[in-house]
Amino acid sequence: MPSHDLQQMALPLTPAVSDGPERVPLTFGVWIAGIIRRWPLVLKVMGVVLVLAAIGSVVIPPAYRARASFVTNISSSGKLTGGMGGASAMAGLATQFGLGATGDPSESPNFYVKLIESDELRRRLVHSRFADPRTDNPRDSASLIEILKIKNSNSRRREEIAIKQVSKSVLASFDAKTNLVALTVNSRWSDLAAAMANRTIGLVDGFNREQRVSRARSKRAFLEQRLNSSNSDLQAAEERLRSFYQQNRLWRNSPHLVFEEGRLQRSVDVAQSLYLTLQQQFEAARLDEFNDAALITIVDPAVPPQKAQWPRYWLLLASSLVLGAILGVLAAGSATILSDWSARNPATASELSDSLAAIPRVRRRRVPDGARIVH
Image 1: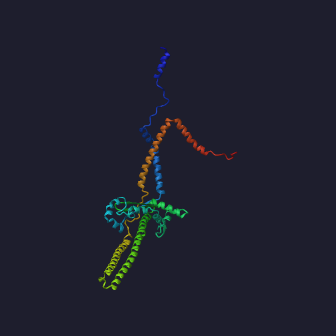
Image 2: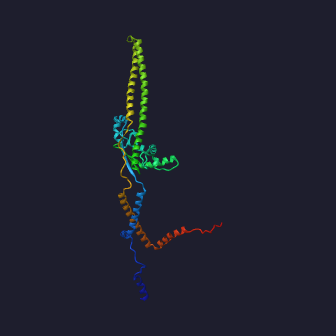
Image 3: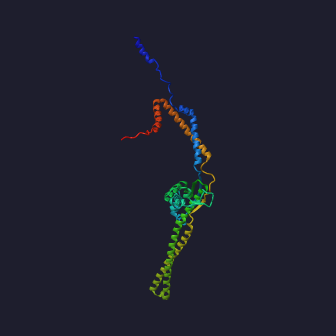
């Protein structure tokens, strides 16, 4: 066999010479090792997060949270309705859905939560006057719009902004089983937070007095008018019967007069029965007008909190350390992945680096002073 043929057969047995050292694939262990090698980067990220948290604790104003609660009561008319057999059978089911023990939605705790969240009540709240916490004089007062320092030349726009801010700071919830409505108010001033909570409950109570008492008063006025009319009808019927007795002393001897006396007597009985019924309803309406005046019972009035919800320095420090560590590990892990990709794709990485380096030079290019555009 020729010698050159032997050489050609031996060529595949010769190992190929590599251009460089073989790279280890990026596994989870290699990625963890890369993060550990970059521990200074993790510490730098944690330091940046701590500095930002410290700046936030100084720049962001403190926040105080005041709490209050009240229980919704059932009006006298609701109690009468709830005492009926059919209504009492549905009372438990209605309570589960926040409708209260009666079927009247306006007496449910959910209704009071929606009332607190309504724009009308918030509008009254932002126009209410409170002790100005920005001054040391306790006699100084200002509206909530002025305390919030809402700057806008349009008064309606200022009101809208104030209502939007109040909707974020005044929150209400309810417990359907106990009819308890809980109110929380957040503010940068402790006394103002408690005053806003108590003022909100006062506005709810004022709504009850305006709406429910006026409704009971209208019912009482209607019954009073009907009672006076029924009294006049009864007196007229009694007067006709009295005149009949005076003019017909021997009416029992005449069948015609006996029939007439019976008709007049029935008119008196009907008028008297109607009068007694209206009299009872009128007295009940007078009691309802008084009882419906207070449909909420304050359980916990708001008191100024002594400890702020923000900032809590130990909690802020712990959360900042945890967040900084997580972000630092993510940054170091990303740097490890990017370094591995750059080593495996040097040409693409070099081109990308050159493109990024050219961006500032493009921004610094300017038109010469003497250059002009010739059309």
